Length: 469
Ligand SMILES: O=C(O)CCC(=O)C(=O)O
Ligand SMILES: [Fe+2]
Image 1 (tube, rainbow, N blue to C red):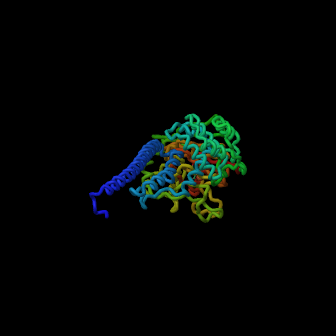
Image 2: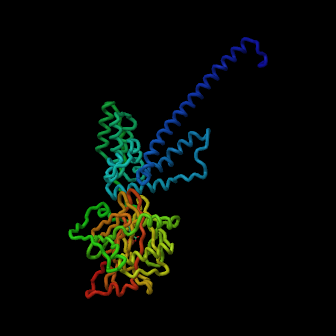
Image 3: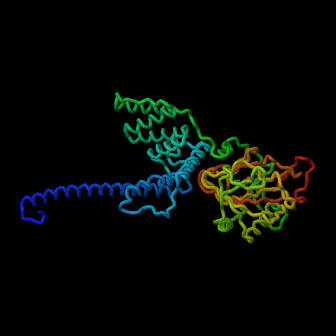
């Protein structure tokens, strides 16, 4: 009977239908409006953090925030918007959960190794450098929560405190949130925070029914990720202070150097460690970078039996060999001038370029070979290490036996001898690269072989005689 229109009853039905349609349309509009509001809010929020973080691309915590945007925020937005449009495509590579966790552990390691203050970090300050990468109280809480979820209970505590401090500073009183954090604080044994939250909750509701947390965890701390690193030395503690160190011009009566002598800063006298300044220009450094582009891969170390190179959790940089002949010849000539040594280039000798990402380090090691020494070359008598970048925070080269911390300086080269005059190993020369906290660290290393230097650095009168420049 639907095709008969001029009946009042039908008219009424239609009006009623329209009411229901209007109400549906209204709901739909509201839902669109709330989607738009959500979209706009998200857009604004991420835009803001993105621009803060993109000025701080070498900042570990900015990097962490960037990763969490991909492991959380963008996935949520994608989920909400998937009916209207496609956000992420199959070709977009986003960080996996494993990568996310690795980043979290690296940050936990850095914070512990350098004893970075949580309240400084929250305010964007990292080891005395003021940056734009500050944390909101929500971000502090969620970072604390992630540490807690990863089992790093001790390290999560200051983050919960900082988060709640920010929360109270904004005059907020969300009881659910306070009680959730109160439960975590009870669980991980942060009695002070738990008490503080209880008092705040009771102020609002004197009869609040606290559910006691039964299974408390014992304090767990960060178990070193990879090898133990010389953290005190890396932080600049425990250093030997030298009084009589010298800065000199060196030329060895070499006509090249008489015209333009090298600037040698002696950092340690016996055994000798020297920094030669301004040996590479910015243009040369750019040339080295250009020639090593695309060649860097996860660095390896010699295995315990010396014959195989292998990956090692105690060396997390990437490196590669530079094999541009012209550039290498030039640098070998330069090194020979700098050190007055015979700098040979045997067939498997290269300049090794090493790049440290944030959190990368190299555990304490010796540069010499202990077995299977190539007869033609001999051992590595000296190391020349060029610093190709200025580092913001961390990333020093440290010599634990000499209590020395060398801060990288772009264009300078560090030189030391791994052998004594007798050819015996100088085991005091063991060294490490501290974790990079902020900035970039790129170095180029060349190992000078023993053979050819018999007359340049002849044996001394005493067994233990050392070599110096
Ligand atoms: O990166 C550093 O400071 C040290 C590197 C090093 O010791 C090496 O590559 O053998
Ligand atoms: Fe080394």
